[in-house]
Image (cartoon, helix red, strand yellow):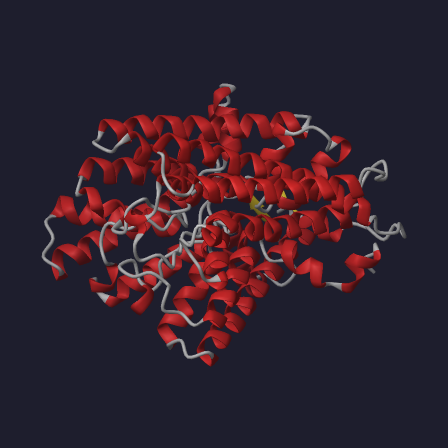
Length: 498
């Protein structure tokens, strides 16, 4: 999300239009009903018991969409920024509520708390699961889990802007209200065209990985599902053992590569396709990200060779995969890193916090923010030595003081929310290590944690209260904190931020 948006003058005095909120939410739910219909087709193809659950869910979602569209048909000519932020935040909640219906109706996840948690984990691409019997699920349900992550990876609004008409002049505000990152590259003058280019890159990565995984021994269904959750950096698998199920170095290397490719700013691919390779190679955030992945992989590889008796190739492959899955917030697993030297856990926690690049499908704080913070720390030392110097923050381009302040506020708020979540989970009986790791994992949309909720375990044993807290943290992390917390700010609902 472009943090500069919050510093603009928005006090227009315009009364909030609930009809417009209903109309846009109805359009978004219409798109979700299309997704549920696609899962009906998968269920019909395999002839399994989840077909009626998806048919009923599609009908319920479509009915809600029609009611909202009818109520909002006399909408105003254009929404204000207040309304777009409300729509984006509420749409993720509504998508989760309607998205959990197939689990409940079919009895696949009979508990409302667990069904909400699983669905929120899907749409926010967190990848944490409460399922302990994934292979027993019908193909339609497994496809729905993967599809929720594929749609959530780029964003609900991004797909809806391209596929459904009716957004008009609100498209840009809606897109910016959902898109993550510090800044936005204006690669195309029209938001719909820009979203279309990004989805094309996204689909291309998914298709290429599907072909490579199929060539590596996966079934077509497994290859497609894992490709969707890899490019979304989500981590849901069709197997309880995740990628480790196949015991294939080839598959591990392919998934590692595409996790890293999916964590790169998608706009860089577009400028590369336009033969502007210089921007790709000189991107400071990409260099930071690649250096971090390389450094952590080398350190952990050496630790596994010296402490765990791995041979060099296996140690490199396991460390690369786990660094990639944590650094990109994907959440797949090929090894139980809880059995690794404890200091490597902290390196992986750092990777979870860092996340990938802005404008990608990955979660976390984002590397560009870390570069800005590192520059601020360096400038502070320089300021002490040269009190009269006028210092600026430059990462490829010069950042103004307002944006730098916003980044620092974001990081402080991020850590504050994590501390509050950590404390609340401990209050509900979760251990210190487990509480810390699950909170960081949920906010970074990563998936696995430490201790009893590491890569070898599901999160089913968490108390219900902890699951609701972590579900909220997943959404807070996905919408980059302020995009979600704004709906709790009273002035938002008054149509003025004063």
